[in-house]
Image 1 (tube, rainbow, N blue to C red):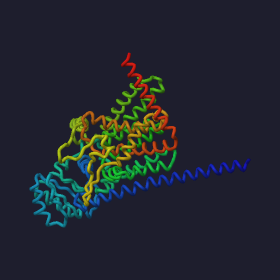
Image 2 (cartoon, one colour):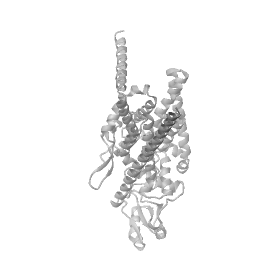
Image 3 (cartoon, rainbow, N blue to C red):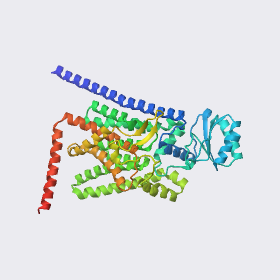
Image 4 (cartoon, rainbow, N blue to C red):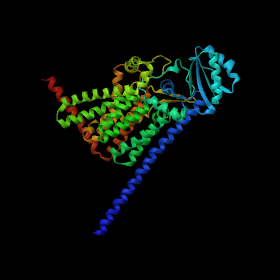
Length: 497
């Protein structure tokens, strides 16, 4: 008897050790692969852009990075970290004539490099040894009317970019980018470190969520790696674009919701909205989950569900506005409170619900459902060989995931954790469709990174579940048949009353 007991204990301990080892190996895989892939992609972008004279920016990150630099200098009074041997400064003049005179008459007398090809902003970019650069700037100041001096990486050639703070989006993401410039340096790879970190975290969260749903390491690793190697994941998490931050915070919200920590899930969704307003779409599923849970506890039925949906909706938006006001205090102090309210709150709502650029020279816009079909994808980058990098997921898998999600809605009622996950997936998608209905007809395909992790979580979970339990398919078909039958019967009752 003692021998069999000891044998059982030994087997139990052996299984625990084996599971810990598998868990450790799995985590190492889902940490290492995205880290290597995203760092490599970000470095490759950096090198390509600098070699081609593209100044290091990739697509829309140009606006977020530039505004982060301006916020750091003009709002916080701080300068970015730079190498004193290759110190850069942007000098903005009253007119382009003064910029050209500076390049012709003063620059040749100094051991510095200059960029004098700005056409949309009267500026000169100068770089070199820090003391030499500032000696040059002092002489320029005495000779020509200088209106602005911004240390750091080269500003893009855009009118008014030296004062641009990207008011249409909340400031938290730009603060984070600015912090990387302050602490690490103002260099393309450095300002991408925060988004790379969020990308690695997103891959780990996809793995952890799938582990909870499937109770199996293999499908969880497969799902995390599929998400990692998807074209849109590699692209968006390698450049400083706000949507990647939003996607990761949404995953954090789901992770908390699956663990029953609904307040943390709600707070994560609100924080996502402090990076970009689209993060507030995450409130849709979590509020529904909360309202349904309370309505069931109180046995209040539909009335309580509607009441608590409205209650938590108003509470969440109120909390978001309060937190947005707090994190925006430096910006409001700089702009003026009334101007901040008009532009960053009212103007932001108008901007998000408006039709933006639609001319032949505008970026390609898309409808939310286009993202699942590979239509009208946003061009992120044109490679030297003539190929283009699009913000586009692997749409055969995306389309399959969406169809499976819609078909599998009945599973929400028998598998609670999957029900929450599916609610996040479809709820966020409904948010983008909602603003499209309200007027936002020029959305861009890089917004779809918000949905990308849920696409693969859903796809892998359903593939694993249907393969493991064939009865699930029968249950889903029977549920749809019964629902359709009830609807038909109701219609018949109305028509033949």
